[in-house]
Amino acid sequence: MRAIATSLVLGLSLWALPAAGQQAASAGFTADTSGVSVDGGGSGPDEGIPGSLVVGGELGGIFPQPFSELGTHVVFGVEVGYRLPMWEQRLEIMFDAGYSPPGNSFETRRADGTYEGEIDQQELHFSLGPRGRLNAPSEAWNLTGALGGRLFLLRTTSSGSKGGQEFMEYTEQSTQFGFFVALGGEYNLGPGAIFLDLDLGWADLPHKITGDTSTGNIAATLGYRFFLL
Image 1 (cartoon, rainbow, N blue to C red):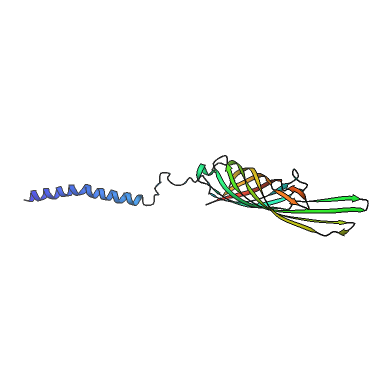
Image 2: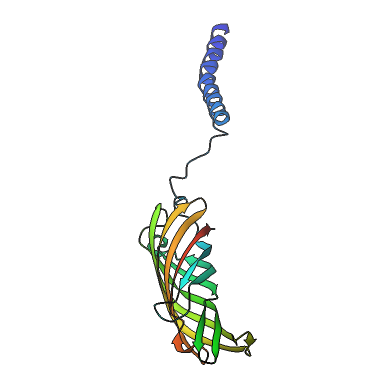
């Protein structure tokens, strides 16, 4: 009987050892890997593509001379856009607002004296249209092109004098619809991109002070666009 009991104890001990070892190994594996993050296999978003919301500002100069007698002046503006998810976000719908006060001054000598005059043209515009990019936004360099409609809010003021005697000041206002075409370049820097744009804008300017002319101008601006969200 003692031999049989001893055999049973040895058999149970040998059977229990693998199970205990397996449990210990399992417990050790869980403890060792509790702080290790698991890679999702690349199913998340591509971190190389910037955010879809675009917010920017720009400052530069406006050159109306090819279209009218107004002079060079400063121009500045702000913009907001959304890059569509198609085509690797190469297509953006953009809206911008800009302001510039180009003007002109002149002096005319006549037999009865010297006449001096000044014209100030205040132009506030709102633009809406698509902007396309040649490369994916994740590339360091990019070429951009945009076109669309532009609404101009115009205010023209004229003043003058003769021999130190000032004339009455006149003001005209109008709202005109036109268009714009823009080409530019971008360089990704920080949370967005620095850019240089050349913009052609045009609308009628049927004011008596300026004559029947246009708001046509070429603007060169330097700015920065944030890529958010």
